[in-house]
Image 1 (spheres, each protein chain N blue to C red):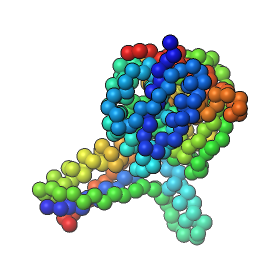
Image 2: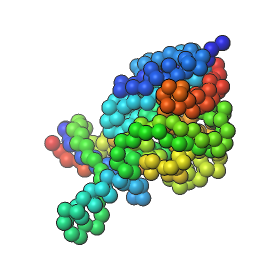
Image 3: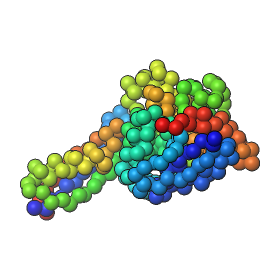
Image 4: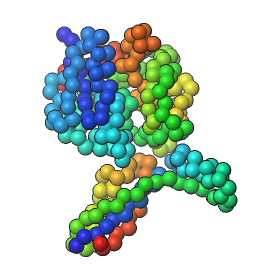
Length: 223
Length: 83
C-alpha cells in the first residue's frame, strides 16, 4: 500500500505542491494538512515544507510553531512518527524545540539560491536510511536564514551520537560544523535546509533528492 | 493601569552577528573613528494593562521568554513605565 504522507501548510508555505509532486512521483499518497487543523489524521509520515510561514516575521518559524496543528505534530514526533522539516520546516522544528539549536541569517547576509553539494554523514535517520555514508548529493538550497548554530555541548552531543546527517562539502552560509541537516536522538525527526523535493528528476537538474525522499518513505510507519 | 514595556532583544554574547559586523565595517568605511564593536538587535514596544509595574514586568518577561526572544541564541532586557 502507498505510504500516506502529510504535508503541513502554514500561511506563507510555498513548497507544499513541489513536495507532493515529488512524493507522488515515488508512489506515495501525499496530502495537505492545514495549519488550523488540530489532528494530522491517518498518515505514516509528516513533512513540514519550505516557504516563509507567517512572512518569517519575528524569526523564521517563531509564529508557525504556535499553530493549532503543532500540538498534533509534536505528539506524533514524540511517539516516534517520522517528521521531516525542509528549509522553513527545519526552522519551525527548531523553534518548536523538536530539534536543538537555531537557524541564523546566512553569514554573508545574502539570500542563497543555488545547487549545493552535500555529504551524507549519518544514515541513522528517517531522511538518510537509504543513503550511504560519504555519498555526495547535489541538491538546491534556497534560504536567507540557514546558518545552523547551537551551543558547544549540543554540538558535541550531535557529533558523538551521529546526529549530523548531512554536511555541506563547501559551506555556503556559515553553518557550524558545515551542518546541512540534523536529527533528534531517535532518528525520527529530521531537519535540513536543502530542498530534496526540487531534485527528484533529472529534468530539474538533479535526481539526487530521491534517495532522501525514499528514506522518508522507508521510515513511514502507521502509529 | 496601562504600561509600556520596551523589550530589547539581542544575540547572546558569543553568537555570531553578521549584521552587527557588517554595520561595524560600514561605519569604519564612512570614516567614523573609534568604533569598538556593533551588535545588532531589535526592540518591541508592548502596551499592556496590569495592576502594578511589577506585574507588568512579569507579563512582559513571560511574553519575551515565550515568543519575542529565542533563548537558544538571544537574550533580552525589559524596561517598564506607566503610560
